Image 1 (cartoon, rainbow, N blue to C red):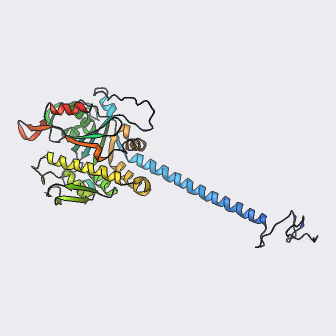
Image 2: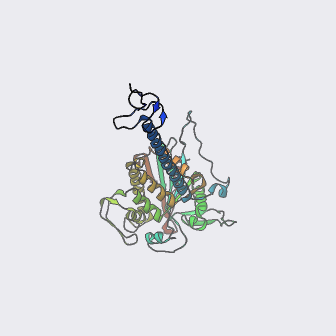
Image 3: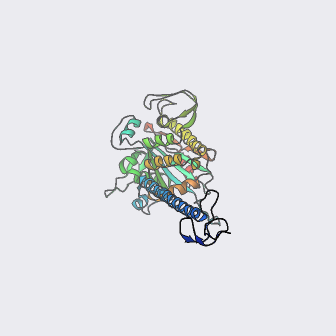
Length: 372
């Protein structure tokens, strides 16, 4: 072997080609030493690690911002504090013997569709009317069975005459008891708190949660889900809701779905009962649409639906976080329209006002008893 110290295969310690002394240096076919390759690889890995770290940091920051944003979208009302203990008892939950990662007990949720016309978009979709004030245009008590495998949705006609109890005002004091008041006036005079108190007073059923969605929010949610498919049994022509539909199956966008939910004069006898039938058809169709839309495989669509939903909701304070809403939604993930029964509170025409209805007893009382 040559003793000139040149690097080569089997070279010994000596002066290398750069005039430096060092250990053995292996050079590959490209003439680059293995030490150089290791150095470059180390620098590459370090740069890649820094880049991945930056991406991860940005992703986590983006996720944190998204979570914060969605959480702060939700409006809430502290109904429990406002009503105190003067309420029906909560439903008894039967222990299932094993800890469940998701809630599984029975629930009663008051769901209101508000006809608030505040905001330009609500005013447009609402078709005019006063720019301030709101009523509970749609009212449903959603009863979820223990085990979360079935549900009953009970619609309350807004024209039902009820005894509206005294309700606490946000500014202090309370409203007066009102006899033979229209059911939807409770929301008008006392907001969500009075709506819940009135429902509990007339049903003796504890409302575990409260959810409200407005005009624009409902339409936007339908659009975010890609529309909804419904089948109507008769032609619909309603000048008030601006809906024209022939009998048959239709895929509706958000504006059309909202018009369907508000249609009253274009079907049947023009009463609120005909509209309730359409609303119940629409609710079941929405359940089917949610089941058919695999949001978990489409993060962008999932975020769009979440943002739309949270931006349009008012809930009680027990549901006013993204984690609580997600927990509720996950616990209901196995629920389909086939597992959901829709009924209307039994009513008869009011004896002194044929344009209003009153609860038909004892049938109405028996229905509410089944939900306790």
